[in-house]
Length: 323
Length: 117
Image 1: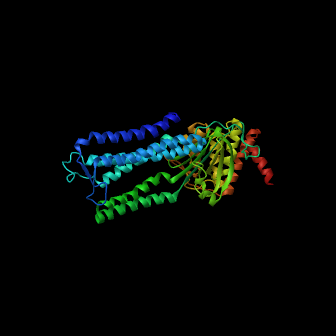
Image 2 (image 1 turned 135 degrees about the vertical axis):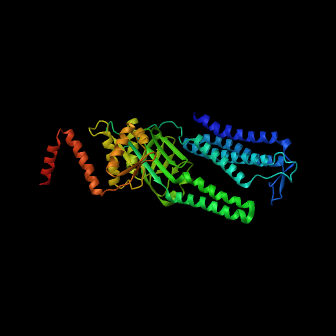
Image 3 (image 1 turned 135 degrees about the horizontal axis):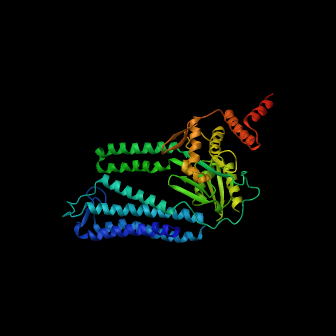
């Protein structure tokens, strides 16, 4: 699937399909629903809300976000390819996650009130079921959005070879190499386990004490589960690409898109502000040695590396071969 | 860590890959608990047969440097004193150079003895 097709699926078909599906379900169930829905639209357990405003409000938010996202997509065409890709990934992630979460919320709430003769006799969705369904939909949306965005940016190949002064690794004519680095981020692994356990314990304590509101503590456990995939950083450099990944966040740069590589040291203040230099400009675990890639679209990508001189020298030598 | 192979070298590819791991250990780039890339991945990146990588990993396992687990790849388990590892690595380069120069094992040992005196 090419880039245009992947962005179309992530930004048009999935959000549009989810909104249309939720709207179609609401219209199809209209005659089977009571006038007002219990447990939504206000404070306290006795709050009720008319069906139409509930559906309009809950679907209006993702619809508005979707439109804003499409405008954002159009604006990014003016940016360098790397930045445009990172911003588009963020927009797609937000739109798909929010849309799937809220459309699933509409379906869960309406489904639980189906065929109730009156508002008083209509039931609210079981909190555990609602939290699980909405979280699962949001998580699935996030993963699909990231998978569809991919980590590879399409840009015109670099027009020049690395500078003569750039560091190089002596390679034989037939020699092949690869840099392989995997780092386990143990503090994050422990934090994830702690959050899952704390969320489960808090839910078990709060549900008997404060009732259904206590199910909100499941959000702590869900946060822990979301952190689980982020426990490892990986950097692979071979004859064709540089691939950096941090959980589901991935960036792939073709060697032909690199003008030159450089070993740099990132100071703590630079590391803290790295995210503000431009979307998708870095994947830095900590201050210290980093590999700096000057790309053909004029941007720079910084990524953590244990032996930056070897990695940068290898990339420049491979670029020399292909230049 | 950096893996490099030279198909034009007389040293077998599997031995070259194992040598990269030994050098990584000696230089402190690899620590016990670190995972090596899977055979399929490393073979793809280096453009060699997967069985060549697995042969290298098996040799490292026999030396007690890595542990192989089905589906989990190779994990570094052993360390060796840096000096000894560097010496082993230098010895391998020396043997490769001797082969290239047409010396047999006895002739090489004689040369080494001469250097010791």
